[in-house]
Image (cartoon, rainbow, N blue to C red; front, side, top):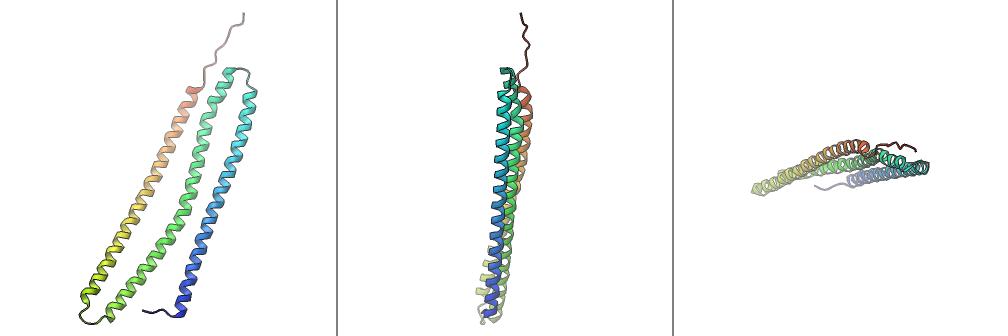
Length: 191
């Protein structure tokens, strides 16, 4: 099976469009990551300023310790939120790449099947065993690829489940730790 110049040009255009699309996706992912990091930096600076101001305004060590203890849960929530956003950016960008690769693999498989079918129709008499061997090898390769894709999908789902579980555990621990960390206020009697 030979390709005409028009088919070659069309294939190259399609490949360039795919490359441009993937590049745009990668750049968009980097932009989102930069925006997330800028927002996190601004929030951290604002929190630091606010916390420093509150710490300097504390009247005694008890108030300072209570301030420190009450800072833990919001900090844990912000870290988890940042990690969730980071994960969403990574999986969103990665899914575009996965879709593009799967599409190209599917196109290549279709072309290969078409080539083998054309070859088997034009094969000389007595070459049926060779054609059958080629078809079997292609079927085995396709099956192996499908197994890999299933394993990757299962691993991704497991990672998502683990992240959700970890988020829940950390938030639960943070909500229980904050009240325990806050010291009880004691009243002194003045003499």
